[in-house]
Image (cartoon, rainbow, N blue to C red; front, side, top):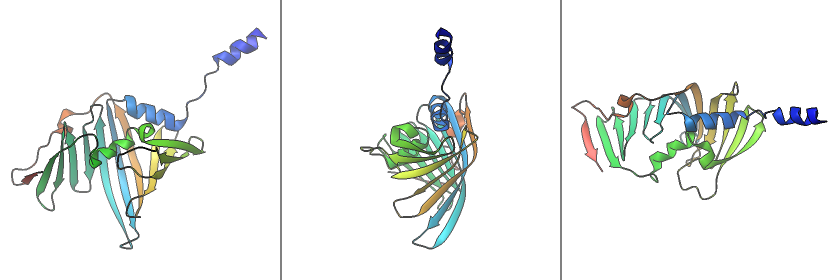
Length: 193
C-alpha cells in the first residue's frame, strides 16, 4: 500500500502545451515570432497577405515588421515607420496605448481565459472581463508539436477574418539591443505627436 502511495506521489502531471508555451514566452528574455498574416476582408471582398516578424524583450520593448512597415517600441516611445510615405511617426505611449496590446501574444494568460478544444492542439481563448487593452474578443489558437504556436485565428473589430500563421518561433537568452534602436534614413520625415 505504501509503495502505491509513493508511486502515485512521484508521478508528475504533464504540463499542457498552451501552459508550456505561455510559460516559455513569459520567462524568456527574448521572444521572436516570424509569421504570415492573412486578412480576409468582408468589406472589400479581398484577401491580403503579409509576412511579418515580432520581437519582444522582457522589458516591454518590441519590434514589429509587417510587410514594409516597421513599429518599434523603445522605452516610452513608439516609432511607426512607413517607407511608402517616407515618414516615421513618433509618439509617447504608456501601457494603456493600443499598440501595446500586441503584448497579448507574449502574455496570453494575462488577457485571455483558455478552453481546451483538442488537448495539446487547439484552444479557444476568450478575452478576460475588464481587460482594457485592444485584444480580440476571442480567438482560436493551434499548437504544433506541443511546443509552438502553429496559427492564431480571430475576427477583428472590422469583421475581417485574421489568420496569423507562425513560420518560426524562438525564445532565447536575449535580444540584440540594435533591434529596438529607432534608426531610420536621414531623408525620412519625422512627425512627433
